[in-house]
Length: 185
Image (cartoon, rainbow, N blue to C red; front, side, top):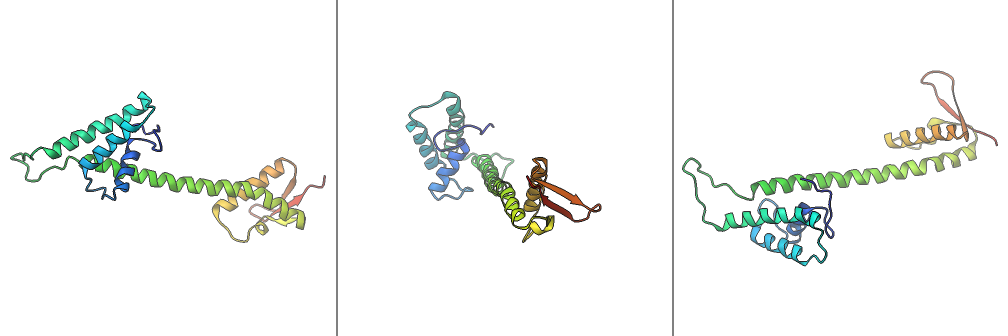
């Protein structure tokens, strides 16, 4: 199912459904399908400008909700071979749980991306400032504490600064200390 569309504040029908479940303080494993379906339909009906291509995905989920609602309203018929009643919400709940997991992972990845952008933006400024105060420095002098992201960002920054002819790099031996020297212009 394609979830790369937006309607109002929601990035897809499952996003709207999750919002309604949370807003009603429902347990995702025990959705009050009648209440949620009514609210979901109300939301769709209130939308002023509906893009048919976008809303069709919302309407597909609305039809699924109505189907589940109707199944839950009908008296349950147990098949002779089955001793347990099948909950018609089960597939929807599984999709919602999976969507919720992806949404949380996406949020975490976006936060990490923002942190990395900040590190990569700030690294060249910090290097220039440090080198301008001290002249010649060792690569390891650029760090008060080590993190993989910071070391990689710093290394890429010094390579770029070297390419721009702001600094020169020297290393006496393989795996030896890297020395950074400011180019006098």
